[in-house]
Amino acid sequence: MHPALLGLVTIVIGVGGCVGYFYFSNLVLDKFIFPAKGTDAGRNINRANMVRPWLFLFPAILALGMYLAYPVIATLWYSVSERQVIDGEQVNVFVGLANYSQMFGETKFWEAMRNNMLWLIVVPAASTAFGLLAAQLTDRIKWGSFAKSLIFMPMAISFVGAAVIFKLIYDTRPVDQNQIGVLNAVWLQFDGGIGSFLILRLVPIATLLCFAALVAYTAWLFLKPLIKSQGERYNAWTLPLRVLIGLGGAYLIFLSFRSILSLLTASFPYGEAQTWLTIPFWNSFFLMIVLIWIQTGFAMVILSAALRGIPEETVEAAIVDGANPFQVFFKIKMPQIAGTIVVVWTTITLVVLKVFDIVFAMTNGQWETQVLANYMFDKLFRANDWGVGSASAMIIMLLVSPILVWNVYNARKEMR
Image: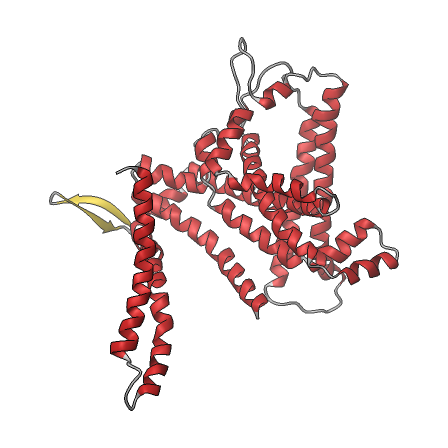
């Protein structure tokens, strides 16, 4: 059957099946199970109204059970079992935590964990920051709607499509051929002169200093109540969280200054085309740029709506009191959209924890770019190691679940 015709038949059957289910289930409920007639008509109507919502929920509950609950239980079983052939028959034998022990002993797993943590630090922060910047600036120009459309457009591209686009940007050809990669074409323009110093050293150093200052300011905001408190008590979970954020900030500041030192002492290979995706550590950032490019549009749309929802009275009052644009933005607007920023941040974090397509299409986890989802794919479908592959899937689920639960909790809290 032709794919287009097959798709049309599927839609007709699917929609027709849903309509038929709801029609006939209501018919059976109202006409045969709880008929609205006789001496018990009122009671039957009430009973039917109590059962009716479950009729509508049943298909969703069935689908969730088949496609969510069962796979989780099956994956958990596979993660603590091993396929063995007994009497000519392949069976799963319980091995306890042996698969987890094997996984934790592999360097590729810890490489994937390290890279995932790096993605978690960079991508949500950069996407949210660029999205907030775009939302603020596009609301101040006449052609802001057109600009928003351009920024949001990458959201319509699949991850694999975006990876192919950026793979062409990072492309490297042999020395005797013209470079078609945009990044290499730009790189070959540098010759070590004053322009090279400004763009390749001064601008990155300034960027790293700004990043370190931003991290230091954020860490200070969290640690300030602890430092200046006078016998004030905090919730049990607040103190460890503040200390953890402070330590994380100190580590990021250390990394920033170490990078600045390496930039000052590094010797760049001018005039040589670079294979960008094979440069350890930095190639992960080249992959992150793809996801940041995609997610910035999402962050911009949500944060733009939040900025538009800020009462004008608060902004006007701040301006009357003599606040400059930066003070208005950081001290008036930011606190009022803090909840939205956190939701955007955590939503992008969920995407990052499950990132697979970009890494698979661009490097396939080579050159120290492995991530958890690609590691799971390698174990399941290349090494055919269902035990370790399922164990890595459970690790991903454990990392995603707290953020997902926290998002649902906050959504319900805001609804109340």
